[in-house]
Amino acid sequence: MAPLVKLAVGVAGTALIANMAYRLVRSPLLSDLGSRSAEVMAANGITDGRANWVSDTGWTWRVARLSGTADAMTRRRTRDAVAALPGVANAGWEDEVSAGGGGAAPVNTVDIAACQAHIDALGTENAIDFGPNSATPAPAARAMLDGVAQILAKCPGVHVSIAVQTGTIGAAAVNMALSQARADALATALADRGVSAASLTATGNGEAGSADAGEARVNFALTRPKERAR
Image (cartoon, rainbow, N blue to C red; front, top):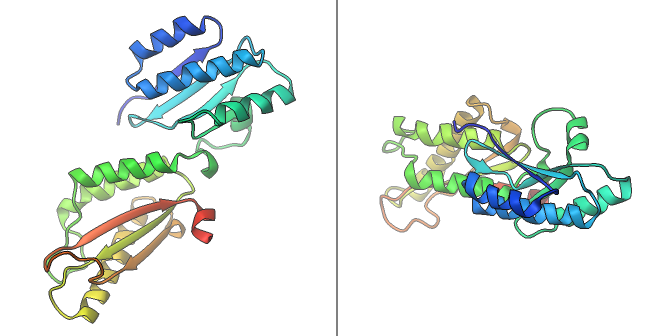
């Protein structure tokens, strides 16, 4: 796991700090967000403002944790302005977030797109395969499942839809049952790795969308609970 990386951008000396950020932080996006959020705080008269950006396991949450001296109205105005910056997933005041208890970000601060992108990227390097007519993931699938579980641990509150399809060899009804058994097995494997079972939906799609006889596909789709309910 990559070390915890924290960038704190202060309003005082914004230009100098922003230039340092570009040299010290691997992500140009994070540096840019830090610079622009510092400008917003300065524009709202917060002279001791800081915007903290935390990257855990090597990737950026794009959630701003703000601190500084301001009245309630200025805090709300600044928070909303920072949250509206392109590329920012959400923003909140550090003391308010801390008062909420627990270390996990609430679901409305989680960058769903970033979580999904990291799972998708993981899937390009690691495949989930099954033996012929088997619902048991192959041993090589452990790396993918471990990685998905680790990412989901940093994406609290999201819902995960697991969809599995088979190839076209065999009877359609058999393939439908097999795909559902495989989806259920993946849900169980993730639950065994600490993912909340209540956040998982497993669906077998049988042969639907299969491009060739031997093809089998697995898809993990992330949504917020309110998006799923629509």
